Image (cartoon, rainbow, N blue to C red; front, top):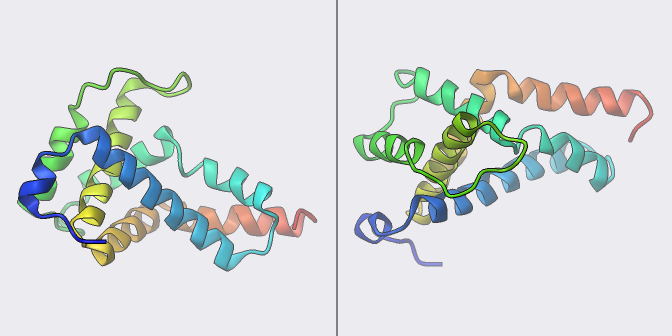
Amino acid sequence: MDNLSDKELLSYSVSTLAWVGDAVFELHIRSRLAKRFTSPSGKLHHIATSFVSARGQASLFETLYDDRDDFPLSEQETNLLRRARNYHCHSTPKDADLADYRRATALEALIGWLWLNGQHARAGELIEYVLRQSGMAERLEFDSQNRNSNGES
């Protein structure tokens, strides 16, 4: 797949960038779980849903936004985060708070923008950074180990 230029990406809507970013994020979480654990897919999906949710991604957004010195963002990345966080969506999931949904959309849009721009390594580094800094990386391992030790493998 060809990478899109910055100019081309500027014409993309926040919702399209977030749609791609959501898929990249979910694939990252699923891959991480599948490589680490041999549980059936249904159990892995149940674990993954707590991370791939508006509430979970909103907390990851806060980690990234609050710790910009530890994971420096370019001016373009910062502007996109701001633009995406303020994006007025036409609908929100029933189980999501609007503020959480906007923050989650911003994180997903940044991941989608990086991915479509060909910055796959940067997208992966960003995901790993927010998971690690938020404590979710350890929770991913603990949740899966706990389920496996309870005979749920």
